[in-house]
Length: 300
Ligand SMILES: [Fe+2]
Image (cartoon, rainbow, N blue to C red; front, side, top):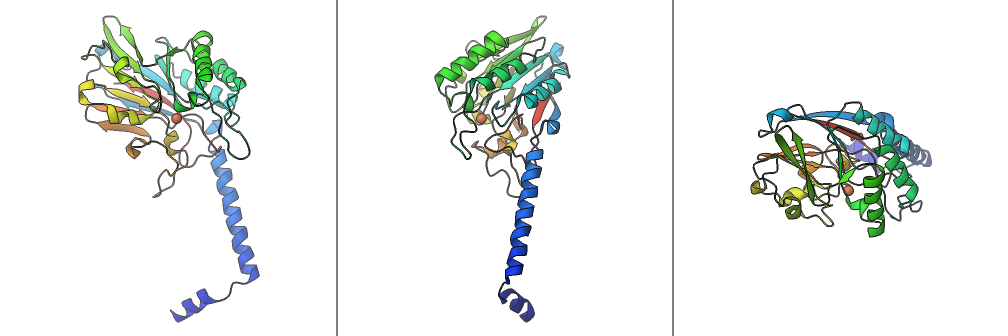
């Protein structure tokens, strides 16, 4: 013990200090390199998620929903990355495509400059890509926080481009009915939880006995869902699965309130929520323990 204390108390030589500094620098460079590699398009994972809904009509058994979220078209997420994600989804021949928000970046002053600043070119690239995200029951979308943060004019431009150029239906506190013969399910969509969401508006005149799937960018909407709403499934993104996560420490940069809803499938009584890790990334092109994701949900 005495020897250990003597060893720890000895003065640090310059060589020892330099070795330590070089070692720490090397580990940091390797870590950042690995984190960057994790964001590349080759790392996008297709997650196949079967979800059992007790009240699902017979004719919707095996119904496939491709979910794409948090694309963040910006200087940090290029068009090839987005194209690859869409191709992964479409190759599965989904019945329906849903997009759960955060399509663009916004003005955020971070070193080395305004790396997320909205620019029309990134909206154009996104629309050119999403035009291919077609499915027999259509492509539906809700808005995320980043789709509001460049101001109402940009939000309006995005909505118009989606609807007129990409054939995507925005659900802004609205719903759509998906029918097969005389059976149907209700697809509800609300605006972002930090902005103009209105669940009451989306649920107006919805038959309570029908199966309801709710698109909400932020999974924190769950704080307001009651058993009486009889929502069967919530599809969300926003969290990026934490984007950078560590064993034990968890996800220090996640911005949602309820940490239960970080990623994957969460059950609350009869209601389930699926939170995708998303396609793109924010602030830095780095992901740890959290690869980008395209989701293929099969209702069973
Ligand atoms: Fe978000």
